[in-house]
View 1 (tube, rainbow, N blue to C red):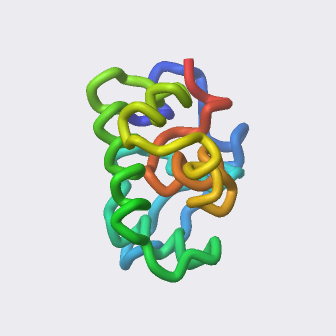
View 2 (view 1 turned 135 degrees about the horizontal axis):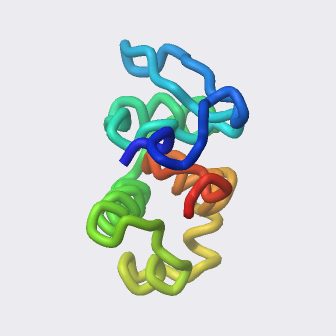
Length: 120
């Protein structure tokens, strides 16, 4: 599910950059989203969470992150807000407050989903 395949993205146009995360060099776009969905790991999510001010990912955080990943793997796209609310049993306000950056720049980024600006 790499973003660079078949979409005309050469990496430079989106500010692709490598950085050390969880003991590996991982490519991110200019807004901090994983370049390749398969580069994600729980340790990478923990490190990115700490950088955004979340020192500990609670079970609630992991429930949302896992939902995002499972939904994306099954449907090939990110869930809509109504899907997330139903899937994790939380209100939109609770979800937005759970992650610095809300759902898009918080949960979606920590779950390793691609930047919505690059999705078809």
